[in-house]
Image (tube, rainbow, N blue to C red; front, side, top):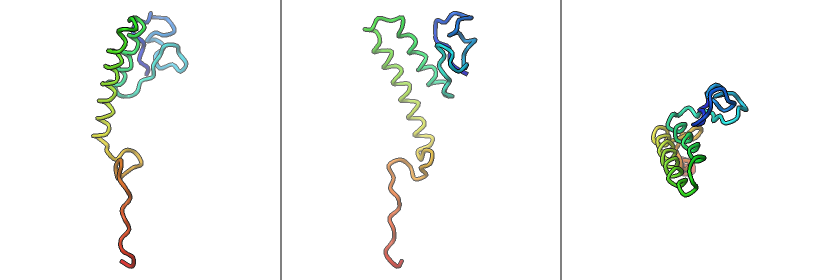
Amino acid sequence: MGVPLRGTVPGSPDSAETAGVPGAVGVRPATGDARVDEAVARLADLAGLPVAEHPPVFEYVHERLTEALGDLDVRDPAGPGNPSGPGSRPPRPGPPGG
């Protein structure tokens, strides 16, 4: 289910009623991580702010997304399809004939 943009009007094409409807205007698809959804939803605040006030919003979103990515690394350092972990090298072959 998508995350409705803040300040939407009920019944409008970008309201919660159309959340998750493919192609619906103003609907952001859910990521499956509430922290990411909340952080990305904050970007909607930019429309009502002067440009000079945008950097703190971007900083907030960046920090939340960085934290969420960091948690993914801690929980699953190997990552999908990489059982040895990030930055690891394949094992060295042993001596010949060994």
